[in-house]
Length: 117
Length: 113
Image (tube, rainbow over the protein chains, first blue to last red):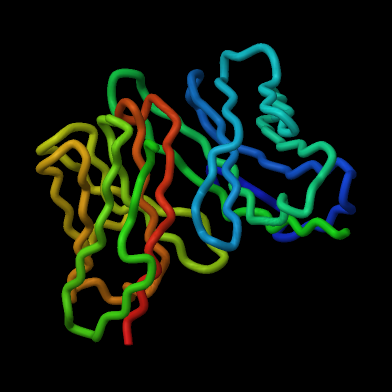
């Protein structure tokens, strides 16, 4: 079974509108972390936002927020007020494992977001 | 400025040759990682190192080798044993092994001719 599933290979959004990128995950661990990264065409992976499994409030970082629904095992990224510079690939990732040792990070296959002027 | 550098940005190699990709960080991070990215796929872990002079195989280590002689440096050698080495290679580091957010370098695109 896939650990991280991103079901939207590509999405379009109008500039200045909000967009939600979907991510579902699969783990039996109680302690885990969820990440979103942005990869522009230049290739570098840029860290956007992090949510810990025990965090009760949804994480927010500027225009990015993570809609964390633990029971549904979903960690959707919401980008508000889209900008042309938001056009990129977006990857959801999960860290799981036992504390004190290496915790593996698994990445999804990504969603390509295109912002239309 | 603190960050992760990878060189070269583009690399061309003939079949049968070994090639080494450089990764340097000045973030004082303990852990470093190498990932491979193929078109339409996510990142797959090649090797990781939680501390100097120690490293572990990831999911796709066959045909690759690494060393970690200095905290700042984690070079990756793509050997001739790697059957399909053409890919985008990303290096990352984190403050502690696996417990913190991984930050990435700009990547190296390797093409085998």
